[in-house]
Length: 412
Ligand code: GAL
Image (tube, rainbow, N blue to C red; front, side, top):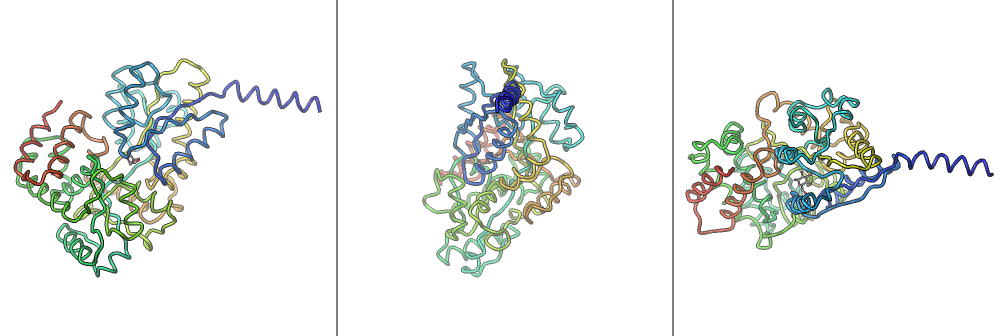
């Protein structure tokens, strides 16, 4: 008995000598998101580490980023934080991020990641973040029951979209479930820009912010089409959270929602089956294009050795095949790691995976502005504000909005 006891004490001491704590900042608080985050937590606990959850609610992460800034400024950074796209470079320049090269090398990240992703995860050639997934943003989610009630057909063009919206309205269903928050307004806007203008226009106008494309007849058409959608949303849309908008489609109270595939995580968490209880189609006019949103975690420099070890274990776990599968099955996204088996994934994810590869080849794989993938955060904030102002102000016409957009696009 005594020897068994002392043996288990030795074993325990071994685990705790390496066990550390990771405090992880994220904004995954909706049904599907929370299930996905739980997968990360349990993989850390399995390694003996303590997971300190630092969840800041608010889709799109604006609130989380505000909280993160104040924590870092006060010298109390978390071990890891969900930071994405060009913002990673902004944080790296502050000198507060840890170098993950040792883990990246041991785990062969350069070999198992698409280069378009690994480039974003590096600062001056060193890994400063680890990617989790690939979300497709240009999705339209639809309720087959609502469409049947309205005798409507799933749209593939914007003209068809408005025909379906009109039919849904006549059938007493809210045509478009929308949440009036600026990142959601912009998620709709960039889908319209991609569908109406095409991938080249999208890149020129919204990624390169080329003045001739920002102020153009195509942009005017994009703005007009975007604003027309508002007439098909309900009066409670302002301020609504995205997952509550998804719930309207889940219940058949609304016909459609334009949202990235984290919405699929909500349908699945509610026990709904793709192709039967809900439909996923590319937003109108964008079947041959793909707006990507890659979630990633940056690690902050820490002093405590056990916590540094825990941080590296977290980075390694995130890129591991097991985690990539279980996390993405819940999150609605697809693995970011190349050559993963997709047999457990549904048809929406399989289509996303196939289209990611095809559009990367054809040049129509574009970064999401709404989700912090394309432009510096200050520019992103300025153009998002104009788009939401235009959405909300029924007295502003498309020409006036375009002039404001041109000015905002110059924000450095
Ligand atoms: C996105 C994020 C997704 C999803 C969404 C809604 O910006 O990349 O993972 O969580 O916000 O919260």
